[in-house]
Length: 271
Image (cartoon, rainbow, N blue to C red; front, side):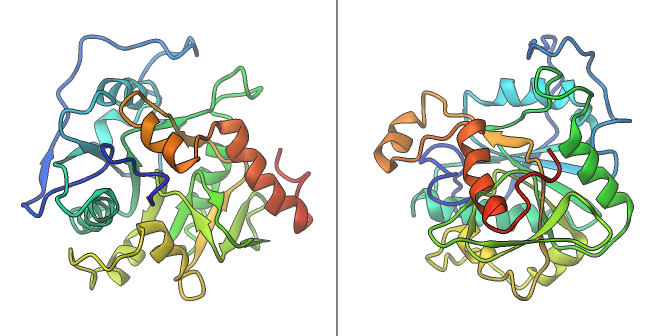
C-alpha cells in the first residue's frame, strides 16, 4: 500500500495492540453479477491457506468485502484485522498495518493480504472460464512450490519504468523489478515474512510499497499476467483520490501494466 492505495480512511491504525477477529457470518450474500454459488475453495487459490483483510474500524467496505470472500470461497480462511485511525497519518498507518499482518500470520505458508477496498475481476463476462486465467496461473505457480517472496495480484508501475522478465518454468508469472506500486492484494510467502520480521512499527517515512519495491534486487517479487485484483473508489476515499489525481479502474490499471509488458516484448503473452 502507498499513498495512492491507502486513502486517509482505508487502512490506518493506532499504536495499540493488534485487533484481530474472525468475521461474523452474514445472512446476506450480495450478488456481484456472476451468478455463481459461494464456497469455491476448490477452484479459487486453494494453495492460499490464510487470508488477512486490513480494514479501518467502522468502514463501509466491510460488507462488500465479506460478500466477495464468500463468493470466491475464501471466507473460511479469512481473519479480519481491524485498525484505528493512526495519529501519524494514513501512510504510517498502512506501514504499521501491513507489518502487523505479517507478524500475526506466522503459521501460514501462502498468506493473501487484502486491503478492504480490493476486489477481484474474474467474472465470466471478462473470461471464457472461471476462475479466469489470472487466478489459474497464480495457483499453478503456487502448486509448483517454487521459491518466491511476493506474488502481486494487481499492481501499477511507479514513476520509473519497472522491468519484467518471464519466470523460468512458469509461463504467465513474471519477475517484477524496480519501481512498482500498490499493495492492495498480494500473496506473501512464509520465507518473506521471516525475512521481514526485523521490521517494527517505527515508521521510516516510506510508503509500504515503495519500501518493498526497493528490495526487488534482494527479494523475489512476482506478478501474474493478467492481473485480477484491483481497488474500488468509495465515497469515503474519493476526495483523497481526486486530490492526488490517482483515480484508477481495472482498465486503466491494466493499461499501465501493458505499457511495461509492451516495452519489454510481452504484450501479447498470457491474454
